[in-house]
Image 1 (spheres, rainbow, N blue to C red):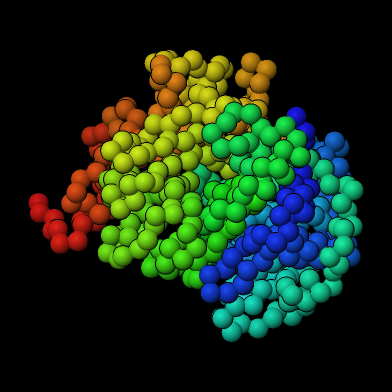
Image 2 (cartoon, one colour):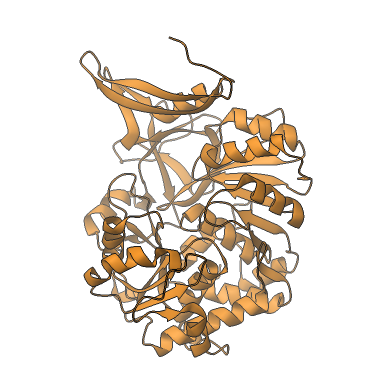
Length: 502
């Protein structure tokens, strides 16, 4: 099998489909594949001309080390987010995601931990960035994308379009050096501690989650020619409502671009506007809509039921990062009986792992069909369990897995153990492997409630309560108990018109 570099794949797909729309911003701009390729080459050559790029090749580094300059993307969704990623890859910088909801202390930590040399940010985030600039000794360049915030350009910063104007749309200066070993960096959300930068070889994340493996198959594309030929049959409209600062949205978008499809952004990129989303789905006949769990699914499905929208072109509602509860799936499929709901499971440290497809009249949540490299390993991390084992183990991934955590050798060794001569990624989710090969996902071990010596998985209880028709939303937590050590508490928001009684 050929080894892939994301920049090289992007260039080849663009050359095969130059006039097809690659990015559509509802109410704004449209960029064809040829325009996207040219703009990202300008971005790359401008960065290279300013001295940014790769310093040390992968063969000389340990798994937790990087030899490339890092570019932090501090943006809302939009064309510039995709362009910043692709442009960085073409310049041999490693782009990384920044949570735009961070306050100054969190932003300071992440940018220093990431050793960011370049930051691309919307004007809206300039005041927060300004607070931490004096504490970022490695930062050399700030690139600002205009918006409607009214915030001015920071001292020494450059406008995004001015940076593009510095560059050339000819071949990227470092094109001959593009390597499958070039990095893809994804920062975790910090659910189990401080955010950590997960280092992937581009080849591995591409195969795992960014289009290198055809949907529903175990085998990767054998070569770039096959990818290009497949992309000629693309053109479907795909939309991710989730922010691109999350891996699930990045993976969905790049999978779409690898396939020669069109990524559509709703008009409102700052918040979830259900009316805007469904109007955009209807206008562009969006084929797949990617969300994150109940938090996005519930208001979207509420609006779908209230309004009158033509969603006949929508084939799949995809929930990545969190499963959609069964009651919401049933409601969606009542309005779109021709469609499917796909729960996709993965993590920053594993890429895409497994999924579950629900159809009208056949919905479920919490059990999944594993991907080709997904397994369950024993609780003591000494063996891979067999389907049908009565032991609750750890959800794991082998094969195409990350190199490690940036700058953290100890956590790299802990999360990526070698078991029986095979290296696994084990980020911390508990699971059972049923005899029929289906994996039952129990939840993150760090949020397990230990009550009276029994492990209780909060997500299981949330799913059960959420099925009740009088419940709109629910969160389950543990609280101290003199009798049990910890006890389960459910915080429930009643459905509209319902009241809570003792």
